[in-house]
Image 1: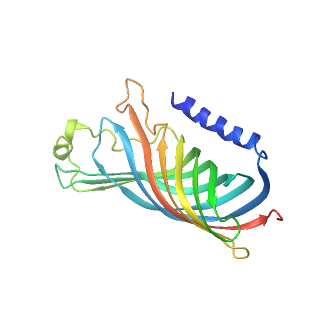
Image 2 (image 1 turned 45 degrees about the vertical axis):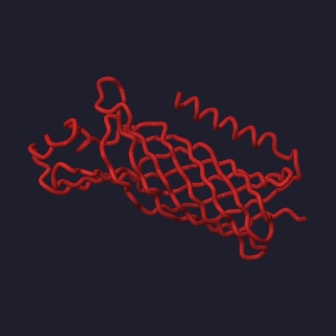
Image 3 (image 1 turned 90 degrees about the vertical axis):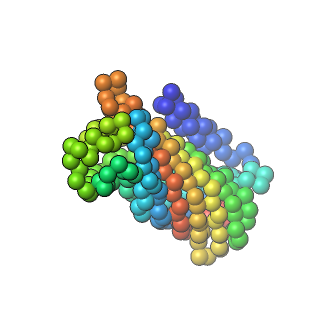
Length: 235
């Protein structure tokens, strides 16, 4: 079911590209950089109580604008980003602390719709599409006693995640967000955006014999971007 959702999103994105040029054509290509901050939690089943784990993110953005359909500016956007996800536990039964850093390279492929001033001024936009990612590295941070006594105080005695390495280093899911872009004729494009990512794959094994039936990322991010034009449609 999860893979079907991802395949459907990819098909819709391909349909957007294939059906381009039915409105007023554009041939705009812009590239640039992005950076921001992520707040991540893991969807665990059985549940592990957590607080949001924050970390910086940054990357490279490419955007191709293909048409203006009525008042909507249609584009396809590809990014290659670094992100530090994982989770931070909220342990209430002892003084133990635990955090797991999982470092990713993320590649979202986004359909983009914008409304507003195209050449000079502000534009509101929305993005949505599939995202894949690859685990680069991971690291555990433990504090407190972490003894047999404190581990047995965990709700449901769920502590098998400690020392358990990531099994699935390839990840996929869906992402989307909204933002504001300020366009200038000479200085480029300045963007600020909020985005949410919902992981469809699990980092640990999820068979009946495994501890967790679900172990996926859920990420809120805020980012700013700067793009400059490589190709611009002459109007």
